Length: 269
Ligand SMILES: Cc1cc2nc3c(=O)[nH]c(=O)nc-3n(C[C@H](O)[C@H](O)[C@H](O)COP(=O)(O)OP(=O)(O)OC[C@H]3O[C@@H](n4cnc5c(N)ncnc54)[C@H](O)[C@@H]3O)c2cc1C
Ligand code: FES
Image 1: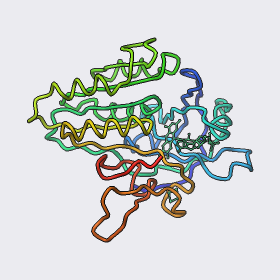
Image 2 (image 1 turned 180 degrees about the vertical axis):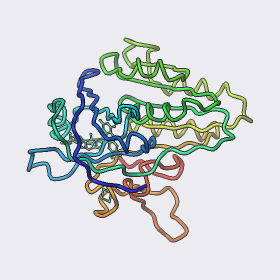
Image 3 (image 1 turned 90 degrees about the vertical axis):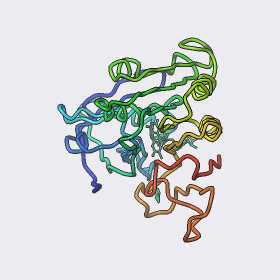
Image 4 (image 1 turned 30 degrees about the horizontal axis):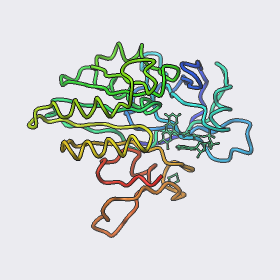
């Protein structure tokens, strides 16, 4: 898939939960070709102090309107500056970057585990799976209802959903890994399933243990710090659990990922 730098108009920007924004840009070609897991690298305008672009997963697309959304939290200077943009502003965006989640036709079920902003790439995944005949089950955890987002979109996308918040303000109280553990334990061992994961590092570690315990293949999208976004600066190494045949012990999150087989990588932070 070829990448390009495009100057795009902001169509809409909206705070959808506390400190969480949905940014819609006009990008007709990308709205047709983006695949879940891919990301765009956005230059923060008029900020000479912010040298590097900031990477964000493609969140959802609307090929009819020719738009693409990202969902982002204000984490620091770049995302704070991005949140202040208005409809009609122009952004310089590099995309589409990275690989994507993959699945085979013989799967019976896709299980999605998302923690907080880890939901970002999965709306597009569910859009891609809209006419897929298998079962789609989403385990989604937030810290509290104040950070909960995407409920309306999820309602329309046909996945069975289990929702938790740590403070019990929405869905079940606790961590999402508890109902996920119960669910995986209840499954027939012969079914063909794949689990897709995105979330904070402690959650990714916990889910990896569960997928090992229940022998479920899984893919994870990582959110390393990045700079160039396409393999030129070697600034986003991901450690491999086992060296490759050529002796390589690291891969690059931006070029070889950001989606990796969950058992093949090590979480270092
Ligand atoms: C492939 C990819 C997809 C991503 N998708 C999304 C997304 O859909 N939505 C979203 O909100 N964020 C996403 N991120 C993370 C996002 O890129 C960072 O939050 C953002 O770059 C922070 O920039 P900043 O200038 O606001 O923060 P900075 O001022 O640069 O840093 C502020 C704080 O955020 C931390 N931080 C910076 N970059 C990252 C990072 N990559 N991961 C975790 N912590 C970081 C810093 O350590 C620091 O504590 C993604 C990252 C990658 C690599
Ligand atoms: S960000 Fe430059 S190589 Fe990955």
